[in-house]
Amino acid sequence: MKDRRKNIFLVGPMGAGKTSVGRYLAKQLNKDFYDSDEEIEKKMGVSLTWIFDLEGMAGFRLREMKVIDELSALPDIVLSTGGGCVETPEVREILRQRGLVIYMEVSLKTQLDRLKRDKKRPLLQGNNPQEVLERLWEEREPIYEGIADLTVLTDSRSVRDVCEDILAWLEKHGLR
Image (cartoon, helix red, strand yellow):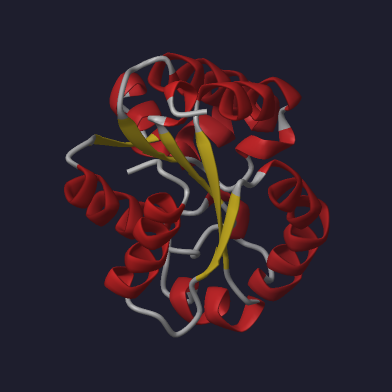
C-alpha cells in the first residue's frame, strides 16, 4: 500500500478548501504541491472561463484529464483537483491507482459563503449559485464518496485543523 500511496489527491466540490489545504499539507509532508486548475491555466495561458467558453465542458474535461494524468505520474506530490474531475471515469481510475484520495466534504451553506464573491468559477457565472451547487452535489457526492480513502469535513474548520486530521490519519495507517 505504501508505494502507490506516496501521492495525495484532494477531491471535492468547489469551495471545499482543496487548494488551501493542499498547499499547507504539502509543506507539512515536504511534498510538491500542484493545483490541476492552475496548471491548466498556466499551460493554456488563459483562464478556465475562457477555455469553457471556447471549448465547452467536453473540451475542458479532456484538458483536465491530460493534466491530471501528467501530474499524478510525478512522485511524492499533493494534488488539488477541480471539483468536476471525478465525472471522468478515466480520471477516477488514475487517482485510485496512483495515490491516496481524500474527499474534502463541505456543506452547501459553507460553499455558498465561501464562493459568494468568487468570479472565477465558470459554472457559477450567470447562474443561480445555490441551484448549481445543489445539482452538482447530487451528481458528484456519491462519486467523491466512492473513490475516497478518507473523507474530511471542512465546515467551520481552519486549514491547519483539517490538515492535522489528515496527518493523524496518515500516521495511524503508516503512510507518513
